[in-house]
Amino acid sequence: MSQKSDGMIYAPESLPRPVVAPGDFPFAAVHLDHGHIYGQCNGLLEAGATLKWVYDPDPEKVAVFRAKFPQARAARALGEILADSEVRLVAAAAVPSDRGPLGCQVMEAGKDYFTDKTPFTTLGQLAEARVVAARTGCKYLVYYSERLHVECAMHAGDLVRGGAIGRVIQVLGLGPHRLSKASRPAWFFERAKYGGILCDIGSHQFEQYLHFSGATDATVAYAAVGNFANPDKPELEDFGEASLVGNNGTTNYIRVDWFTPDGLRTWGDGRTVILGTKGYIELRKYVNVGADPRGDNLILVDDQGEHFINVAGQIGFRFFGELILDCLHRTENAMTQAHAFKAAELCLLAQAAARKITP
Image 1 (cartoon, rainbow, N blue to C red):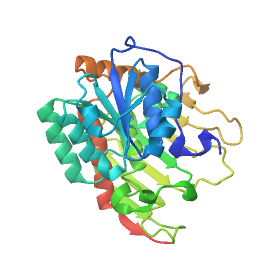
Image 2: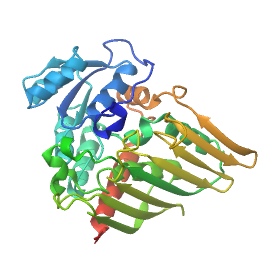
Image 3: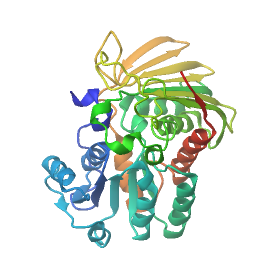
Image 4: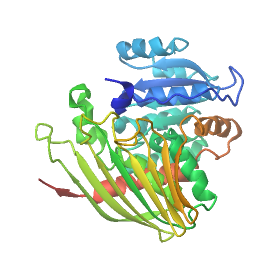
């Protein structure tokens, strides 16, 4: 199976665009439960960060990680990393239910934290992280990869901010994924550990809605989840949908599911449609089905015509360089703390409000 066909091990790479000199920004990678840690590390390394440490309770995970990143020293315990005054950032992809408590532990040690999505599985974890982040002054950063590690999504944000489609009215987000049931770890099917489908992969969609619409808050108008095809995994939700209304009058609809068929060459046909008063943008993120295997396709329709743009290899992933500089200078150019937490809050609220639908 190619890397692009399995979302759990999908780790985009780009040309190095360092914003710091070697050794200026040491970081560590810990709790390697999800393959997104490789994407997190790729982005940081390409931006000039120095990977100093790795830790996981499972030595086999550490061995596999060090085969890819041999420069990382294997720590005997998490405390060894937290005690290292040189380490500025701890990146992690723990079991989702462990991400919030781990982040608080990292921030209490005086270090910034960069977690895979979803960053929390309960509103209580979110509340605690908000308190700890405010008290320590440390950052709780989130890898919302379906925007931050997708060039056409980054370009769409620039177009929207530049007024290319006028005022945004609605954002439509579709996030299908391939289940790959046989290769998933046990926690993936335990509701308390993964948080529910709207909390888990839905977190990407809510983050994109806030970013593209400019809303800073929203209410959940409708949400539903269901298990349609996996009776052997009763705690799995393989379908979810939700509608939001933003505090600026914009609306959002998302659908997420685990029904990507094996015939699709990628792990999911992720798409986003941004409707504005003067045009619309469609993102065909990972493949242009039936036409072109390349990802990073952007369609812009405006008064001047129809524009199909492939931006693969042209935009890069500037988020990671901005993140490093934010950590060094205590700025918020990559993503504000309020935005990261609000996206997390919306996915938790939608999950809590979701009614269960059955086949």
